[in-house]
Image (cartoon, rainbow, N blue to C red; front, side, top):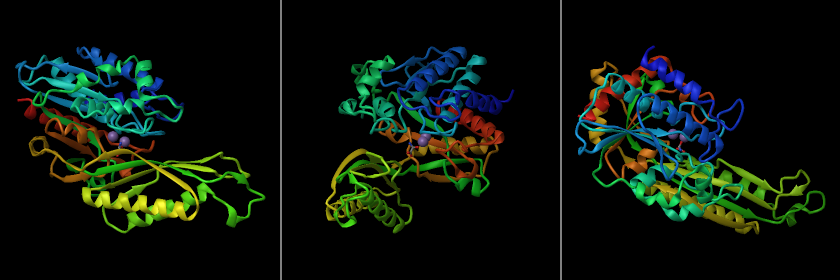
Amino acid sequence: MTLGQKLMNRLDAFARQSSEDGALTRLFLTQAHRQAVDDLMEQLRGIGLSPWLDAMGNVQARYAGLDPHAPTVMIGSHIDTVRNAGRFDGTLGVFVALGVIEELAKNGNRLRRGLDFIAFGDEEGVRFPTTLGGSRALAGSFDMATLGLADAEGVTLETALRAFGCDPSGIPALARKPGSLHAYLEPHIEQGPVLEAEDLALGIVSAINGASRYSITLTGLAGHAGTVPMALRRDALAAAAEIISAIEARALAEPDLVATVGRIEALPGAVNVIPGEARLTLDVRAPDDAQRRKAAADCLTAMTRIAGRRGIGCEILPSHDADAMKCDPIVQQALATAILETGRGPIRYLPSGAGHDATAMAALCPAGMLFVRCKGGISHNPLESITLDDAEAVMAVTIRAVDILAA
Ligand code: HGY
Ligand code: MN
Ligand code: MN
């Protein structure tokens, strides 16, 4: 069986680790995540590694190198997903990493540098109003105050970690010593249309856009849908509708800027009750940090102005803020050499509109990403897919790039 076929088979099988029948939803520290961790650790043992679950819910393993003192090369990605996800976002990089190490281990080959396998548990930040917890823990930038953040059911991150079998007091010790990692390499689907449009299987990520996220609560007055005249209403959902249109207009005003209200909840949610409360999220991204900050500020200003005019309370809680990150030139060069030496050229550099754990890891060590074309550029959607040929390509190039980085 080819390496690409093995990769595709593993991804198909792993997609069964979900909290929903017929859809892939694997949120951080849920039962589905636990099953995925157990499944993955079994597979890692199967290739001769001794994996462990760390205090932040990441799965780690090490394939020792010839030089025990040499800084290691880390490869992997995340295994948490969004709701009703595709089976390639994150998981592709995790199983490419497993496949690379399997190839070395089965022939007893050792590189000078050790290889650190990583499967981060919380890249998406869907369950808790925070994100990149796993990679921030390794990079030493995890904010212990986020342990008090709660999910929609009121379960705090700390409680969920303990229920998962993790001891949060061990999180600070996860931070890798500066200099202990030579490089971090994350294979990932592009989640966009560029590679497919140019008929390219692979791309080298040049930079990752910055992102700002907020949780917003609009408070009006619930009332009888039949008796309260329109002019006397404090309808939180109608305010949200005007706010969402203002956000969209602001983002449309500039190229490369994107703003998304991904989630909205109207309470109490009855057909004949004027919504007294609306909860929504805002995600603003751009390649340039000043551009993003200005756009986010403008969105928040518009929000408070609209809410004020309508007599609606407006509480805004920032939940994530990551500056744009330039990928490391050494890692980019290793990927470029690997692409050319495996005959997978031409080389294409491109920025990532999506956020990744590499953003957090870049604070610790040289970090880079290898993108794989995905059909229609579709992601965060069960229609997410890659071809077998492209699976072969990402395996071949990552094996070669790891050889170069771990030499
Ligand atoms: O939201 C993102 O960009 C990533 O998929 N977590
Ligand atoms: Mn991802
Ligand atoms: Mn994602």
